[in-house]
Image (tube, rainbow, N blue to C red; front, side, top):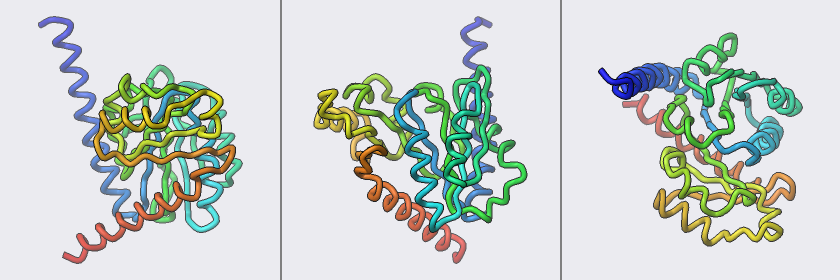
Length: 231
């Protein structure tokens, strides 16, 4: 057996085990009525800033919490704690993504039925997270205007595995000569029909629409679950 064949087998086994845990997590989330949103992006795309703003605003009307992954330090969790929402940091060490088992362990001590929204902020990486189901209802992929319009073409798998694309830091679009038309075209080339939202935490542009979108998706999910329970 070649080393390459062995590597493929190990990877398949790891992903299979992750999927088993993810399915159980999804069942727990649905039974508890919590809507789970994961966020993936490259480093510096603005995930933490957007999540802090989202937690702070949604907390006024909903029960929200977050799990945040990083290779080292608890800086992001400390920053998100300013929202006054429950937050836990997951230190992944050398692992460049969150896995379902990490989420399962981090949830110990939390009562899921006391939450409306749970946010999962993945490690800054646009490669590894695409393969790992976390039991989420909605996966957001973020790209900032400072990263260039060709991000979807360079990392098609993460855009194909996500539900919605967020273009962040749009307040800088003019300064960096960001071509929004080209960016949207590239996203659609990779994932036809994908919803795209433009946001800026600094200027506030698009944030109301983003929160409305989250509320609507949660309401839709609750309707579907209610219909299934009634049958």
